[in-house]
Each structure stands twice: as C-alpha cells, then as structure tokens.
Length: 71
Image (cartoon, rainbow, N blue to C red; front, top):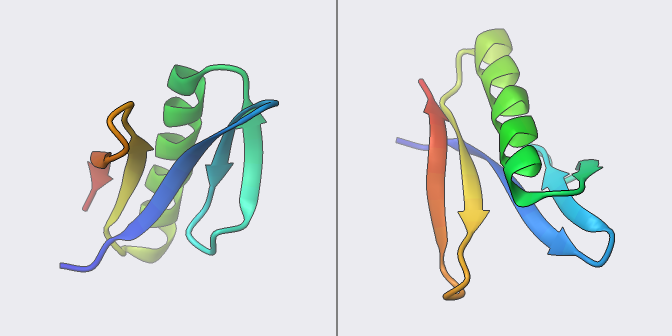
C-alpha cells in the first residue's frame, strides 16, 4: 500500500511540518505539537481524497517511524 507521508523536521526555529507535496505547511514550537498538526493535515487529506496517509516522525537514533495512519 502506498501512503501519502506527512513529515516533521527539526529546525532552529522549531518543528517544521511538511505536507504531501513536501511544501512546508507550518512551524510548531514542540515535537508533539508538530506531530498533532501533521496528523490533522493527514486526516484532512485522507478525508478529501480517500488516499491513505501517515505521519513520519524522526527519532533520536536517526531513523524515522510512521505514526498516525489514516486509511
């Protein structure tokens, strides 16, 4: 199954949320707020298109995990 990924990324200004087109959507001060924002965007995208989505979250080890799947 192919999912549209919504990603968060650490920046000096906070946590950047990137949408399905890799465009920066918004910056949030904490990682948790960024995950919540990314999940909201992913859920909205899934509701509008019916395509499966997920949120990709970077971990301290350098790997990333998928959370917040829709569809």
